[in-house]
Image (cartoon, rainbow, N blue to C red):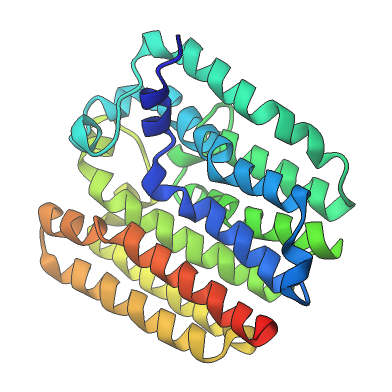
Length: 281
């Protein structure tokens, strides 16, 4: 019998919003009124980007990261360790939960198919060989554009076109910074396992500075479309990165990092309503 508690934990519920959030933001950005949101197709893909997609991302990651994860204290209680004997069952669960939804990709427009396939590609090969982007500094952060792709997918699902290129690039910078900051608490374990990442390459201070530059760049590129929201959110992340950098210790960085999912979720929540209120009210 499947270990549903294990499968749920592997999917990182506290991070579900990173995929589901962009999906619903893409929807609300694309529709003209709230009545357009009433669609079985939108609901089905909402379910997909809530659980199966997250099981894909983090399940594949944990399958290929055992040698690093067993050295990482974070895996002992904050996350979960996927041991070799659990791999086949996890592969089966990933396939079963994703297969039906992926089949529906092909019924959409060219941008829907392209963004859907891109999501699968980046999600799998971030961790899996032969690319295993997470072991290649800077490519590891670039591959995190996978978190933007659900928004591109849903926008294309409504409009049949891609969203503005500047917003896609801004999203890519934002997710690159998100990844780089998340890699800082793992520097010790990654170096022990001889795994190269953007954080092991730049070090703690260098990675913080990279994050600051990426967040500012994202704010500048998105200002044309989001104006005050871009300024306010950029300020939030600048303060957070600065506070983390000034802690001066791995424990201090991790204390700040534990608030990171909450901050990201709040930013996504505010962005949703920032876009929705002028349209729906």
